[in-house]
Image (cartoon, rainbow, N blue to C red):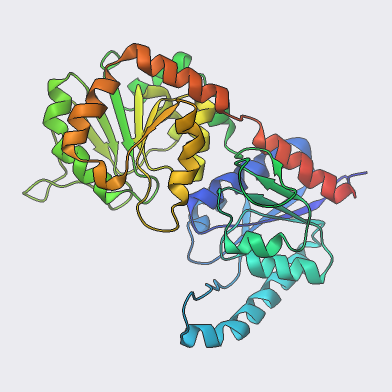
Length: 366
């Protein structure tokens, strides 16, 4: 039987890709167990220091302990740093009298998993990416309560639950919200609409190609909302924010559900959260995977592309020429966009937050 007022600690941070599912799980837990005490744990320098308190969730922090990939002085100092972070993690778990630890990945999770293991506190893990991160691979050695956003993620015994996301996104009715979303974003209600985003950090190569394609887009009657990312405004030759007919740029918007509702087509990177949200709301997309790292963004997109819900283009191939040849005709092809939207929506999972809350409360009860 689940305690009436369980103490639940959620660990994760660094990027929006970790913080967004953490907050979605926290919200679902509040709904399922209104008396629960919920505490999030991150690092002092991550985005969580802003996003978690803004969501009304208490935040504690521990030192960030990156794992060096090559021999260096940092590698020699790793054992002492990790031991210190595990002590900090243990103090947080003890002070919270934690009944369960929920980890979503990021630097903070490894010391939290180790401290929970020492105290025999049950651990529940959600892995957002097709290629699991190091922290969650470590945590998976200490628990069988594993959940994944993608069914092909190689964590043995994991349950495929999808990506926890805000209900404003998972329950979005794009058709019903389109007019109000376009009004809120300052867009023409009737023009074909392309919305571009490179994620919370922006995407410089995407920004450059879009800026170079503005004349083509305008000549085709397409309006473009360009979400450049914080500090990534696209400037003209005079150093001012770029302006053009049918083009509007902002660094960020409060609530990506507005963008999803307003878009006829979304142009974006293929981070795990973005791919899962695209499927959940059924928005047609062109995905340009990040060209660096371990290639996980292309893998994230593979299922959606195979299902016919999105088009994939390599970062090096996403040029103004490609935009003129492929992107612009797609934005104005209503029939193809409708087919893509339906294909995408069929792939979407819209209750991952509730499923995770169930797994967490089950762990507490046992």
